[in-house]
Image 1: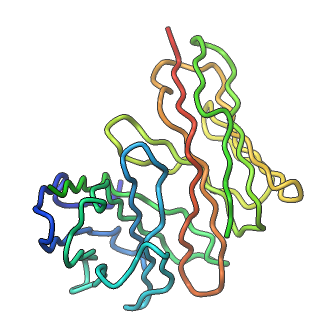
Image 2: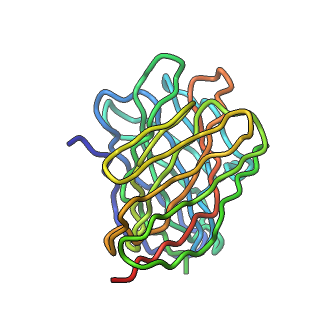
Image 3: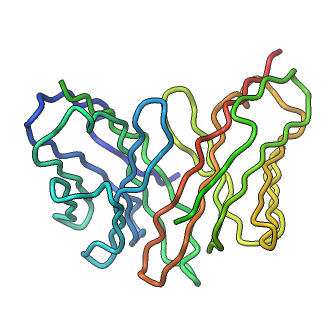
Length: 116
Length: 112
């Protein structure tokens, strides 16, 4: 069964460093998403991406975050200068075009980011 | 902004019991999702609903759009059903992609 894959599974970084989290969405999907979950808290929406541009973003997704689809398969989330509070599990998801855009989102296993 | 409330927060039951988890939301939505999160952290989509009822194996999900309420039922519960069950809603704004708003989840433990 097709799946969304995320790498790495765990990333440890020093405060102030840049990190890039990588995702390979399901191949025929056209909508892509990043979410995060701080330990013990609920999952929060960060950003959605369609047709090579940001479709929607939350208040969390400030200037230190960026997303990119550098080639036909990868979808990346970059955090420019990490802060302690960026420590969280980051989930990538993708969905397929469907009528009314009411799509099931398929989630990756997540990348656990630890900022020291 | 949509508020998503789930109840109960924690639920412990015996194997074989019928389980109900509830979700309510404050603003009209395009679709409601039920998701399952296991201790390792991975998230699996169980259902996406915009109306009525869906069934998959021992899982049943219903939604009442007028009352802004959904329920997830598990029949003949089993210890392997132990997980966090999360309700999430989409508010399709016409922009092309539908970021979800999540509830806090219901932590379910099924004891043998």
